[in-house]
Length: 354
Image 1: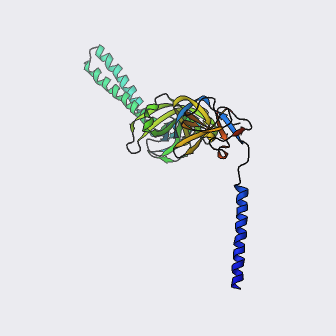
Image 2: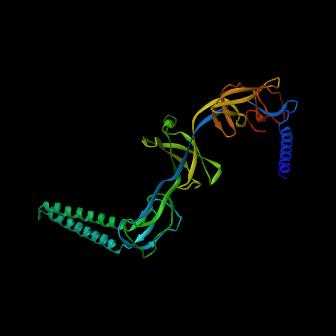
Image 3: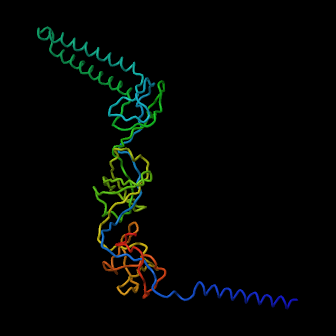
């Protein structure tokens, strides 16, 4: 019985071996005769931009949290959530009866001192009293005027006004609320122009200058490009990260950008002219880059190349190719150096995809 089992096992192994050999012949048999069908593209000169890329945070051009400078009770509010306001517009009025009374009292005192000054002046002209008395009364008049200014300043502290034009946030107080210095009443942001704050490596210091134009994209507006200009370059470089902090300003009159948003920015480092080929035509082994060039005899030649900047779908070739030469963009995995090829389909030019 054991002998039969051994025979059956050998026969099964033999059958599996034959089946495997047949599959290998079908999958890895001799290559098909005739040239390999490939798609090529012509290397064409074009202008490439070397870009500095970074992530920027949007900040308002001016931003403040409005609060009272004195302790008081809210008498009235004069704004709604999200209102746009003008500079100096009254937002909150605190109870100010005592301060108004102080202004009135100071004005009465000033009027009395002026009346006294006129009476003394008549006596001086009649030489009934010494002229030095006028100096004393004038000092009292000056003091009364200063008292009025002080009372008016305390009265003004009872009014919270917009320091600049912008858009308000949420109102956090109501009539009757007791506010103290530092109590948040609302926020105010000037969003007509926004700041884009970002950091880049110190090696780009020479590439960034005041006035440089940059492009920015936001996830909220994927099809839109925002244009900004470099406004400030912080003079100090972070000694830990070796990063340079930069601020750019962008027009935001339509309110598309909001404080706190994250933007992807691109700053042009330099522009140069080079040969463009599709990225799919470029092959790489280790640090070496090469392409397959199709000659007039339809034979493929492997060519080592030096590459430069990249952009979406294209790569710049700095050396190893001449303008007008055709490189294989599709079918590279089916050919090798010296293979015969046949062109198929729309070939495209300068890396443009058919």
